[in-house]
Image (cartoon, rainbow, N blue to C red; front, side, top):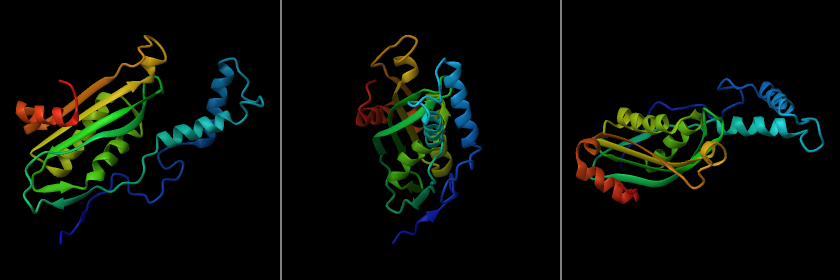
Amino acid sequence: MTIIEVETPLYASSAVPVGALGMDRTAATAAVADLIRALGRDPESAHQAETPRRVADAFIELLTPRPMVLTTFPNDEDYDELVLVRNIPFRSLCEHHLLPFSGVGHIAYLPGERIVGLSKLARILEHFASDFQVQERLTKQVADLLQERLAPRGVGVVLEAEHMCMTLRGVRSSGSSTVTSAFYGTLREDARTRAEFMSLAGVRN
């Protein structure tokens, strides 16, 4: 039987208390009330009396990653083909406008000496998405962590997302999606392997 190796947690606390990541719920609530007031509305009206608290709690939830430990296993079977988890839903907050962007991620790697629990590929994406982000950085963070922790023969990450800062304001390009990618090792160097990943993930070249 394979023994699970428990590695350094990405965020090891069994419970994430408010303030553990530098958040101040009281100050955030007051700041939202000030913003509502600055926009010419009354945060103490019957309809908005609870809005500052709700907004603060929503941001705290969106910015707090769940505890996660990255577990890996010896590649006892010497599996050397692509491992892919596709259509992983995610959501994050644009750091420029504080508006959500959401979509799906496709994450793959070519195993070396170790493999990772499949659910952890989704959890890695969720972990890094729980922050103020830009999609380019988020894509690279996921790929970098897999490259660092697994030392695989190759890594591929593609994210497809719709950004509310584009669809609700500015150009208002409803229905548009942004695609970002990061490839390392064989998936970067070998066009056939990269094409296999894109085809299996259902991403149009």
